[in-house]
Length: 372
Image (tube, rainbow, N blue to C red):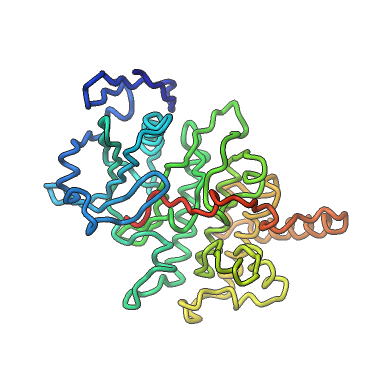
């Protein structure tokens, strides 16, 4: 059985010998340069995938904490064991995507294991988990993320996305940017995780048409509505992630619907912005210890990133520059002028919630990485 997979150097072939549990990649493949763990090594490291080492569950499998014989702490993503159409190809593609991305703010791959019954990815263990776990799942004894750390997370994740969009060859769309997929290393540096939904971009194409994947509240309206994604899809998700950082809230809560408040986080922020009640947006866990000016700047960046039309959203490289203090005022003023003109012409965009379709499939958040 042969499966082809394309990456930065063209098609790759994996060969599966009948009855042989081992997989033999093309020797020229980037995957062949990664450490190939045996299943037994990872079983021992995770205490046979015990519940005590369970870190989280995502759309394609579970993540476990592990420790190798040399003492190195790892996170093992164990993909679902049930065979699925294209599952091996998805695994190979995901492996090569992660392996080609080399940046401080992008998760690196330690190695992998693949047999007929198991597909596992091995990452460094992220001792500080995910941003989402700190915003919404921290223990009472655990300190909240302070404002300087939140600013660093905003800038670090922007740099990681800018790298994926502009410096990788081919470029990479993450497709599920959210606080749950921003991991934190020992120094609380932001690391983009979870490439299970990522797609490679052919330089000859300006977009990819595919099945809609992602998490409700984080999905760009044009992607949800048409199935077309681009780098600007990630920009939208990044903007929502900024709002998560500022407010501590989820992008979408079923409780809001039950209470009759049919709003997404972005809609709520826009309502309070119009009412000039920005102080009500700020995460209470900050206890007022933040910069009003910096908070307003992050909100402006978030709103620029989440404009209804992808044409109006900045590139992630522009977002990075704005967070570094360059060009935000000019870009914000341009947006306000455009917004005023569109309203005069009756072209104002619908609230993002208007694009949400009645789909139970979309209600389940896909969190493949989880805290590591």
